[in-house]
Length: 108
Length: 111
Image 1: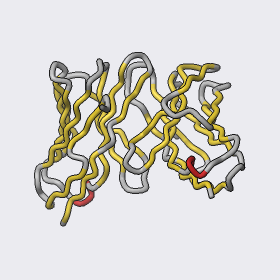
Image 2: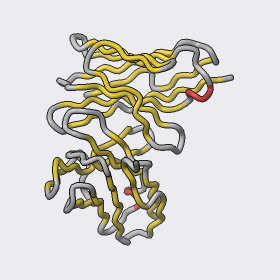
Image 3: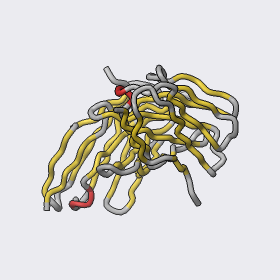
Image 4: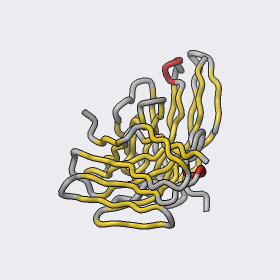
């Protein structure tokens, strides 16, 4: 079993829909990181969380440390949000563990 | 403000050839990492470094070597490339307790 699990693996939505991507982890962490990767592109940082909630534009990320779970929400989704969303956790001093990603496609 | 820069961005190698990928960061970060990304497998750690002059093995180190002679540079070497090393390689760096910053990736094909 992976130490960081994401769900769903693939997601197709219509433009304007509210989207939720989930991340669960089984290790102790100092922080959790949401990343975005467009097809053929680099990896961009969206959020770093150690508690609570963060919001940036249409993106909201939450984390529940007790339940070892984080969610990434996208409100009013748009085709340009189509990308792979990756959850990563910082565990211990140097360790950085990635989920396998959620491939999101938003249709116009 | 370059951040994390990887060179080259693309490379095609013949089986048995060698090459070095360079990762350079200008943020004075302590930790640096090399990952490979393969379809359906997510990012897997090849080697990492927690400071200048130190390196350590990650999950999939076989066939790769690394060096970190200067704090800002982390080199990944393939001594004798194999088709199984066809992948996209990402370098990342981060300070001790905050988020990682990623390079743009190197797409390597071994034929």
